[in-house]
Length: 499
Ligand code: AHR
Image (cartoon, rainbow, N blue to C red; front, side):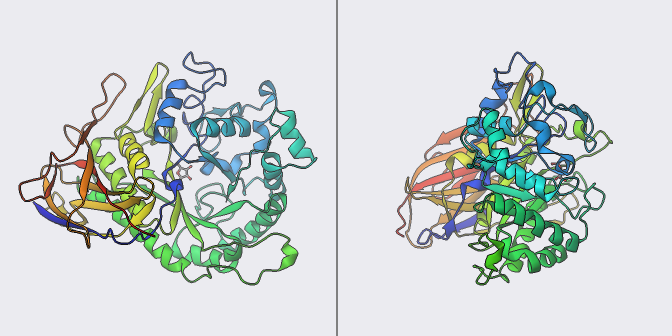
């Protein structure tokens, strides 16, 4: 099969923020408790952090970590998770089932972020929590004055402020079946103003992420909240209606459409807020409203009411190809999507799966690791001509066989082209051009692949994902690149683009 890829290497389009490679952890099943935190396990260090999980989390190099939910945030009171551990409350997790003992709370979360090199991103409870409680949390984390909550943090052994810059106002508040009380956008607007005001008065420098949803909700809340909304949160989970191989990839298309439509809406609001009542006593938003894709991933089969158990999904290689495609979407839309957190990091729909004896990296771990490690910090524009995937009824899907994004690393002076060949059986031979220079010197090609698209990893087996690094092995005699079936390839070229 033939294709064409054209990357414009004459112009850098926009900065790609490293926060697009963030991760998310929630009090849901064994994500936090028994996943990243398990003080009773011989595999844990003196902080209670599972060492094997910590190593794998570091491998993902997440620059941002979102906590403590998710839906669970609607019942989360941060003061339950501070102070002497033996005095912390044991509570039923009324959202997801099981028990939370709060031994992993704010300070443990911050310590975990420091260990893996991530910025903390905290979501506040707008359902059973109050604006004042949220503002106190900001003061506890960031306060530097001689005040009660800042001193409380100091008394817990943290003299220096945690400097948590990113705060989310609620989670999926428009979701009617969830316990949230703010389904009506006007209720959310009213509550958000109060939360924002008190939280910003505790620390004027924090950035706020507000809950997005369907277009009508987004417009309603932004019409009122745009002066103080730094990021609009969007969530996307790929769930296939059937098990057809090709249909799954249409989710990447749907996710991209959702982002593009939201970007169009955001363009209606001024880049900079000009008039803002000084009596708010804190500054308004300073730049365009950004998109925080702060839950994205694959949630295929929810077959029982044991949500947590069902979410310990095993992902095959096809799903890893979808994760790579979704990463391509995030890169292509990186002008607006400047923050994204994968849902979730451990055990729940996750790249890292544990049991009491150990852990393993799922297939989806590998594209997450690869893109974070090798993609550049500027987006380049690219065009692709490639045949569409066909479903089992012979119908064309919305997804092309080849899916591509391109970036530029201005420190290393490299152009990186990320290519996913989603065809389950056929390789694709593509002529690659550069919108100006005839040819660029290839430095390296890094390819991920598995024996088949159905391959999975597991506890008892060796990692099935092969990472092949080479320079020119896959060029044909006419200088076209041959992308093997069901593969993810990063092509790195030497090139300088001036500012
Ligand atoms: O990630 C699992 C759940 O999915 C989160 O708690 C919620 O925000 C979303 O619906």
